[in-house]
Length: 161
Image (cartoon, rainbow, N blue to C red):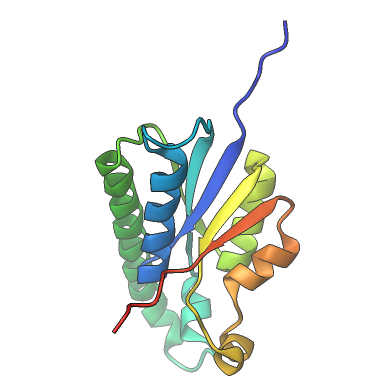
């Protein structure tokens, strides 16, 4: 007898408003009791930057600061994942797999898709303009082009004046 596994949805979260909105939107539309009959296993992933990537170009004395920077990054990551867990619970979504993975968010999310054999990746959109996107890079754009699954980019609606 063949077992039917549920498809997997990976949601990338960070400490930004667009990241939080994307998580809430996906939970409301795919996991809420009133949502259509979608059945996904949920994996919530936070990419923790490495201390070196935060510092950039290392100079004298940088090595001494790395443990403090890493401790701060771990604290931020734990806060992001705890907030995601609380959001899931508040929306009656129980049992998500929560992961903190060190690395660049673009690579971490694409690797999570592969690791979990995800059918869908959900990411938020920061709404950067062309210049800022070119300088900073867009996680959502990268994932849309490199993830081996469907990618849903959730944009927060603009506030009406």
